[in-house]
Length: 416
Image (tube, rainbow, N blue to C red; front, top):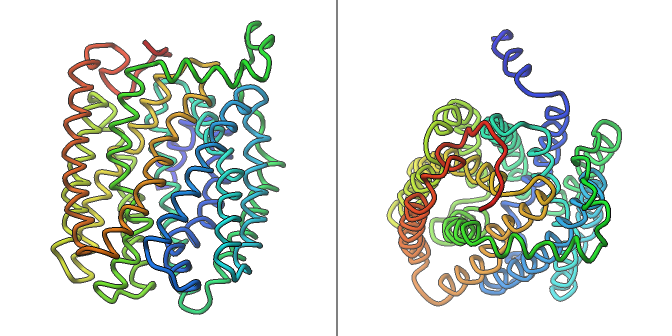
């Protein structure tokens, strides 16, 4: 066992493991709070899922703006400083959000946190792509999924017990963990931004920001983004609507919800690395279609089943799709991006999360408050079908190109 661990460790550079370790600690803090955020808002401020959905949507709009600015800053000034900035903002927000007792104050602060805290997201993804050669990225992003889900085993389980006692402890714990992570990043993590070329050195700040037009005019990349948005629109319901749905429709308390989420994490920890070694041999767009198929099955099940064991089974099916799709999508985004625009492309890739965050909770809230809540899962199944065909169409259109023939490409690629 030790020999296998040592072999895996030696496959990646030391800096990768520093990034992975600090990310692991930070995700524990995030997962203490994130799965229970909608529960907290609806219970603390006595509002419905529609209002909670609008809150999450505006937070995501602010996050999209912050991510856009952060991606440009990371390409121009480096990754490390932007990551530190995001961690400090996360800590301050945790200390503040937990004590706010007026909904409009909470609403405004949540928008501010979305704007500032999201700036680090593209920098983190770009850092992974900086560190690893192209042929190791699929395994590297897969390994990050394993590490993230180790944290998911710990975070929601502890968070469920803390939420049952007092939601304030979720916010305080997240703040403390963010500070610890920031200190470790400051102490251990070097800058990974590639050395700029002469042209990049002469760019003004405005030119760096305006460089987003390259990504936004890359039509194949935008088609990939659109298909991913449809897929993630369904996937994100597990972090926003699912907890409220299980509580209100099936009377599942937060502790059991934490166990359901931990089921997903355990599955990833046990099987992600093996799955990644398999899927990197196949066309990535077909793997995205396969991932969406599993999402369709798993999420639709929530509209038909009514017991905790079956909820766990649905989560395992969803997790199979997650293990296929998440590392593959990150690799595709990295392969599309020129080296000197990597963080900006990753910021645009972030739209696949921010746009669903803007639309999904609000739309699900409207369904929850006005229709049969099960319709959320039926509609999700239809969206997955559309996304599957979109990914297959991308495979037909782009799959013959060398960089899209399999996720484990051994050469650097640039967008077409």
